Image 1: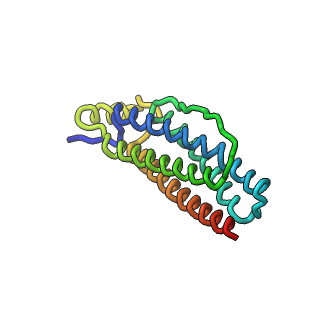
Image 2: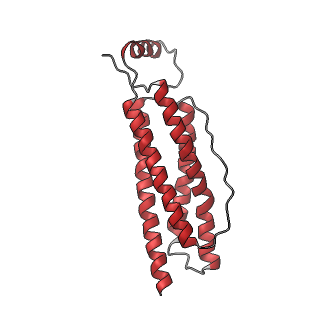
Image 3: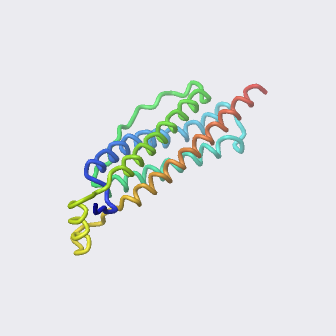
Length: 180
């Protein structure tokens, strides 16, 4: 059967849905990491060189992820959508950072699910032949290839794995500092 480096329309819709959900968690990261840093430095009087740099790195990565996700959604023919959540006061940053790690784990799960959908959604048969003819004739706009989508989603998942490790380290460091 003739296969093409393209994702089916149903696959694109499923991936866009997962990416829109991931954008919601990325947005919460963008909002919360600076708040955690501010609280730890200005209220808990934690030295700036300990945990805040890791949290700052995570915030910057979240901004990058949000931008890359928007681009990928648009390339897949979708519309970026996410809810802006109201942020509550930080009663205990240690607890809030633990909650944030759960959100990073959710992000990791969403990236993995989207990658799995991309791996399983390939244009085949007559649809693949027609797509190839249109591509050769230059009738398609900037089409995003299936393998590119799989690669991007895999990179995002690896970033999330790293984020989870950084948060685990931050939580451990916070626990040690509160015992001292």
